[in-house]
Length: 314
Image 1 (cartoon, helix red, strand yellow):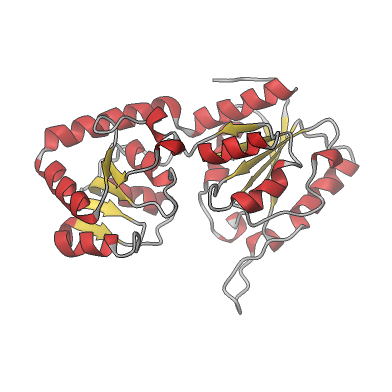
Image 2 (image 1 turned 120 degrees about the vertical axis):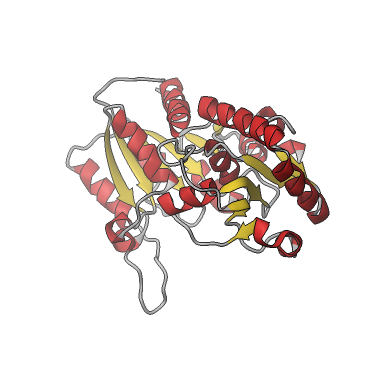
């Protein structure tokens, strides 16, 4: 675990509706880990009015309100060691720029790369370092002389862990309709063995994954996704669509040792049936994936990586 000076100050910029009931997010998990190490962390909301829902439109809106508050705090003497912006490509403003934070290391995390790469790129040039979950985007940032690091997805070990809970489903996911009818075909073939319901959050989502013997994933952009790590952290066999080698997935997990891939709906159906019928093989893969996630892909590991980047830039 990377430990720096105990009086370090960190300003975090991320979208949140904690004030209105949000109990967990990946950004909140990073904040919790930083605080657990004794650092002073102040969060500044990218959402307008702390994430208040516009009832007439049923949406939350982004604004410069949070960063303006940060600038006001800095004007009256606040000097954060790190300004850390975690965003999914929907927020940017002229007030966000390393030139406005002298003495601070400004780091951006681009949570929705690769699909939000174009939007995230504008923040990359205004930061001292860029953290991206997508290896292809890291290479693209670096090609434009951006100090970019591979900060792939992770599982918050405080929320995702093996639970003593009834396994109600053979295979479970919350991805909804995906793959141009692929998930619907899997559901039709497996019926009650396959559960695909959406809109679970926080603890409810973690418990949902724990209720399956297998966790299923179908990516939207052939990208590495959070559900892979979160399913493994629950000590479940994870089966996902085959991802391109260019994602660097093979640097993280070994096929049929830590993770299972499918290339079509029919193959997904056959493999789900096979591993439901072969418990020892299923458990062996689930345990191997779990061990790798706990070793290298937790909130603690990602904070270590963040602090290492800061240390290199200081």
